[in-house]
Image (cartoon, rainbow, N blue to C red; front, side):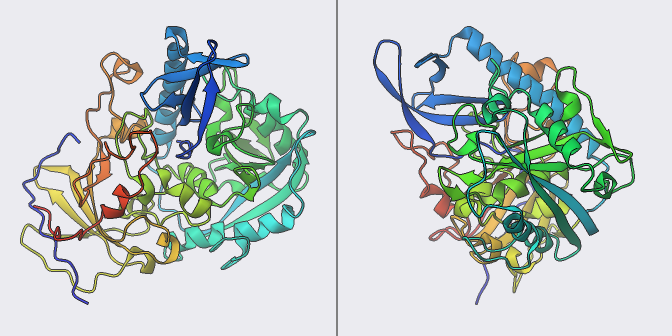
Length: 472
């Protein structure tokens, strides 16, 4: 079959153009103090989440009623964002010199339940052992295990297996650990991490999870019973996230088996009310452990980011989390698994371009005036882990790399004058890693007049779309 020929002009210049984000479509109707009702959608991430109406008004709960967020509430939200900025700068800086992730590595998944919330029948250690490690695991709607996912992304060079232990009973109610502070953050999850690690100390050797011999565990992962707040759980449930024990106020790392435990991540048992949650959130959070940034607009300012085409954006929810998409060309490059083929200034014809699902080559076109700006080409087809993509074809991404932007985890988030980022000396006025939309829909129309997400627009994002088969 004849492949699309894409001619890209190298004279193009930049155009203005960590946690899972809230799952799209989590709407509910809330009652205000005067008795009126408002339809609102969950927005944000674990550092700063809120409910927002279609007109952009943010609402907060006050007892049994709701009210529009006042100046103090908005200030608390900003403080949550600043907490994220500071923490993510430290995280991304620490991963800057990480070598490629290759060879056999071992991770740890701790199943955690609570006195007032246990796992559903059958959701036991044996099941999660299969979800984590079994080759080609295909029951309960899954299309592979977590180990399968990372093996596929690395073309088999990263062999990740997990020790799965538990369930371990937490000391207190799930509501205690999931309760939110005034700036929208989950409160004492660090207590939970320390509790369960100490409980299982005799069952595992934490030194097994120190991949590089630096005396620190790469990550421990908690999978807790019940729902998570990101996809419809109550306000007193935990929002899936990655964080550090030392980043809590007055926090400190835990030392067991001669190694330090600081980085942790967590996700939930259930997807919605009853369904078993998929592996998208686990893969998203574990990818943060490897240094990948969030690629969604963390301020929810309307930037598209990477949408469903990236695990580090909304792709973690594809197929109800059962089929997160393949790592993009940039994500594989960052991880040291696949370096793109550089194309020259001359027109180049590429034939037999295999899809990413078959580990096909990807291609890079550099801006000769700025090597930190470049364009990535990859063939995305609905097969393998990409089976539930909203579109198929040639994906063209624009990258404008800035180390400060990456370290602050605001890759596709524009800063505002005087906000917490600019106060720290970091400014960003455009998306730094996003796709060219074949239909020229830049994302501003992704929500319809009722505030509902319009999935049809993403279906036309990859090339060719109709007669549109070139980018110049």
